[in-house]
Image (cartoon, rainbow, N blue to C red; front, side, top):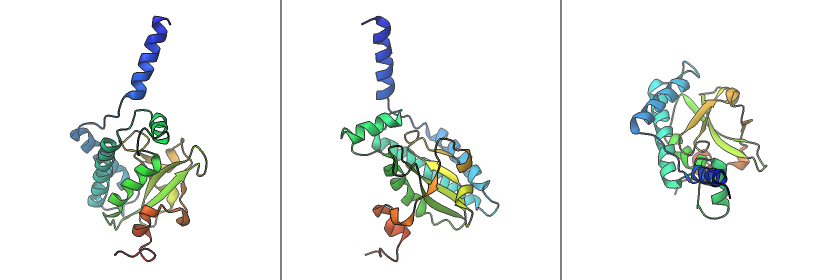
Length: 190
């Protein structure tokens, strides 16, 4: 094996094996400030303090999950480790299902949260959360995707996300773990 081949394998292995760095507290605070700004741009009806809380919670909980899941830089490589049993968790729906309750419990009066998926029912299926202004159409919302960058929360307008054709998740496909939050009349608290 040539030296170039060995170096290529070493670099590729290092890239795959490297874990995500979620940034410093100051960097995450700056990201939360930018996300809050973007949320407030959805509608003048959105409360700035609510947007601040949601943004900070989304950024910090995504970073905390990254420490728990210890994802690799390449999401597909991380999924492979989960699928073969070398990691317990870290698939996109698990990131979404773990983040959603933290956002839901903020009880926003000016924003709505929606479960979403793209390419549902295929091997390319991906899951996320959409935030809209209260009563605003789903298609005008912002995608929150903690999986895409392994805990460094990715967000953007649905219309600008060319990677995934986001659709609302039908109620009958609501994850069991989230049903008590979203369907309390069917799943009363004990």
